[in-house]
Length: 333
Image (cartoon, rainbow, N blue to C red; front, side, top):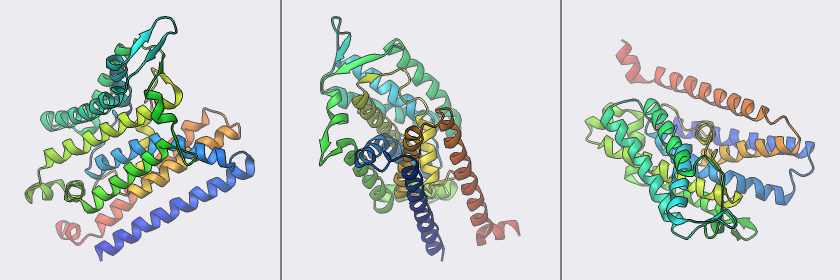
C-alpha cells in the first residue's frame, strides 16, 4: 500500500508539472510569437542544461535529508581555480587562453569541495544548512580572491563543450540529460542510491541497520559539488567569460527545481525526472518573461513565489503522510 501511494504521488507530481509546463508554453507563445520558434525552444533547452545538472546533484543531497547552499560558490571557485592553473593570460588581448586541463581540474575541484562540505558536516556535527552557508562564504571569497573580482575573458578548449552542436542541439543538452538519467538509475537501481533514500527517510533506522551514514553523506555532497562544477563549465563555455557573479543564486534556482520536481526537503523521497521537468519550467518562465519584456526585477519574485508554494506543499504533504503512518499513531498513543 505504501509503495502504491508513493508511486501515485510521484506520478501525480510529474503529470502536474507536465501540464503546467505546457500551459506556460502556450501562454508565452500567445504573448510572443518568438517563444514557440524552434531556435528559441532549442535555446530554452540549452539554458536549462546547467540548472538540470546542478539540480541532479542537489536531488541526491536532499534525498539524504541534506542541503547544499554552496553549490554556486563551488562552481565559481572551481572555475576560478581551473582557469588559474590551466590558463595563460595574454597581455596583448587581455584574454586567458586555456588548455584541455581546465576540464579535469574544474571537475576534480568541485568533487573535492563537495566532499569537504560533507567532512565538515560529519566532523563538526553541524546542520547541513549552517555548514554549507559557511562554506558558501568561504568558497565565494576564495574564488573572488583568485580572480581579483574581475571579468576574465577566456578562449581555447573551455569554449568547445559549451558551444558544440549535435543534431542542431547544444551538446550540453545531451550531457544534462545523460547526467539526469545516471542520477535516476543511481537512485532507482544502485544499492548506494537506495541507501541514500533510506538514510533520508529515517536516519536513525538507517544507522541502526548498519548503513554507513557518513560515507553516504560524503558521496552525495561530492556528486553535488561535481555537478556544480560541470554547470559552471557549461556557463563559462557559453558566455566566454569568467564572471565574479558566476554561480551567484545557483543554489536558489536548483533547490527550487528539485523541490518543485517532487523531491522532499525532509529526505527519503526523490524524483530526478521531476527535477528535469521543473528545471525546464523555471527556464521557460525566465525565457518567456524576457521575450515579453517583463520587468527583470520580477524574475526573483516569481522564483521566490514558486519556491514558497513548492516548499509549503511538500511540508503539508509530509505532515499528512506521517500523520497517517501507523508507526506515528502508535508512538502518539
